[in-house]
Structure formats: C-alpha cells, structure tokens
Amino acid sequence: GKGGKGRTFTGIAAAAVTTVLAVVVAGQAADGRGGQDARGQSAGEQARDARASASRADGRPTPSTSAGAAPLTYDQKMGVKYPLSATLDGPGTFEAVPGIAKAPGTGQKFTYRVDVEKGLGLDAELFAQAVQKTLNDDRSWAHNGARTFERIHSGRPDFVITLASPGTTADWCAKSGLDTTVDNVSCDSAATERVMINAYRWAQGSETYGDEIHAYRQMLINHEVGHRLGYSHVTCDKDGELAPVMQQQTKFLDPAEGIHCLPNAWPYPGR
Image (cartoon, rainbow, N blue to C red; front, side):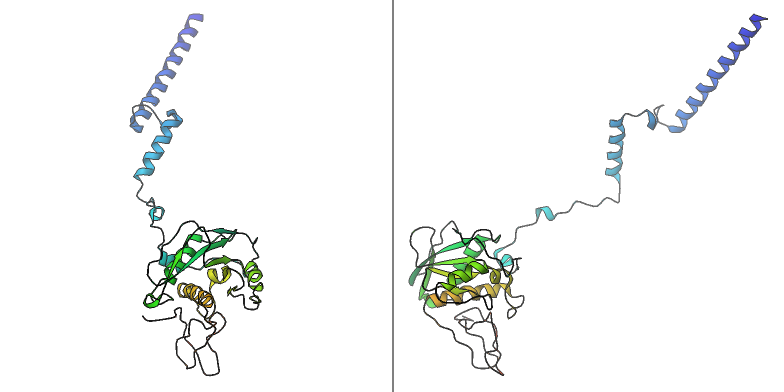
C-alpha cells in the first residue's frame, strides 16, 4: 500500500512539471523574444528600449532653432521700448561707459563722455553707440562738416551726456534752475558739465512719437545737445510742417490752435 502511494505522488509531480514547461515554451513562442519577457528585463534595458521607441516616434516635436538666433542689430535694439518706472529715483552714482569713438570729421571738434547711472538695467553700450551715431549723422549738428563729435573715456570732456533715472535727472537739472518733474523730461544742466537724458523717456518714449522710439531717441540726443551748443526752444509756425528739433516735442506737437507739427528728430532733416 505505501509503495503505491509513492508512485502516485511521483506521477502527479511529473505531470505538473510537464505542464509548467509547456506553458513557458508556449509563452516564449508567442512573445517571439527567445524567452525574455518585459518582466525579465533590467531597468537599464527597459530605459534603452524606451529611448529607442521615442526616437522612432513620428509625433515628436522637432528641436527649436531659436537658441541659435542671431543677436539683435543696432537698429532693432533702437526700435524696442524697455521697461522702466516713471518714478524711479536712482542712487545718483554714475559709471562712464568704457571705450572711445573717434571724431569722424574735420570740423569743430567736441569731446564728450557718456555716463550711465548705476542700477538702471539699460544697455549702456547701446546708449553710447546711439549718441555717437546720432551726433555725427549729416542730418545732425555735424551737418556739412561743421562739427564733429568724439567720445572719450577719461580726461576732461567738453560735456558729459548722462543717462539717469527721473529722480536723478530732476536733481541735476535743478542745479541749473530747471524743473523736469512736471512732464518728466530731460535737460541740459548748463551750470554743470552734464547733459541729462531722462532714462524713463529713453526707455519708453512719449505719446507724441507713439511707437517711433528710434526716432524719438535721436530727437532726445539732438535736442539736449542743441541746448549745450547754444540753441533755444522754437516751434513750427505752419500746420503740417516738421517740428524743429529744438521744439519741446516730448510735451507737444501742437504749438498753437490749428497748427499741428510733424515729429522730427533732426536739425537738418532730409539731407
């Protein structure tokens, strides 16, 4: 009786092993991967499979080329408005923009330095470049070779063109008896060495010029340096005429009833 039981149990075990082997072989054949299913893969192998699958995916977005985009040109930078508060009051300390720019002409030479107040967050080199380009343009005070302007970094210049916050601009203009707070404007502080350019106006422009910020910045430079050269305020006297560069164009383009002037950045426009 005991021998019969042992043979019975042995036969049952053998049948069970045979069944398991059959199931495993069938599973390998169905999976088609030589017996290694996903659960048998290592984490590294699964990750490689995932990357390979992703690389084959048709719906993947292509990498953007914006990272390799060319930097903005001078004209493009001059056409952009920059954020700056109309009530900003900076520390009142300045840094001279490094570098020099030789006077290109042979007329009466004026030397100047460019100072920018600390903490403005504006492109100081762009400002310095704009001053040199604007003043030596034939439509500006260098017209017909009469004058030429040279930027220096050290030594004693004829004047210092200074980009400063509205608060600091007001302080320096007050030294010459000028109040720039009413319309948040710029000035030539004639009792000092500084021609003050209000950074708020430089960054944001004016309603009179709208989106023409490049031309407005040229007008700012020409107008305030014009004061330093001895020119006073004037207005146009006929409707539809160009405003003289020495008109207070930040404030108005309509000097009298029925007269509307067109914005103009240059002492000698159209030449």
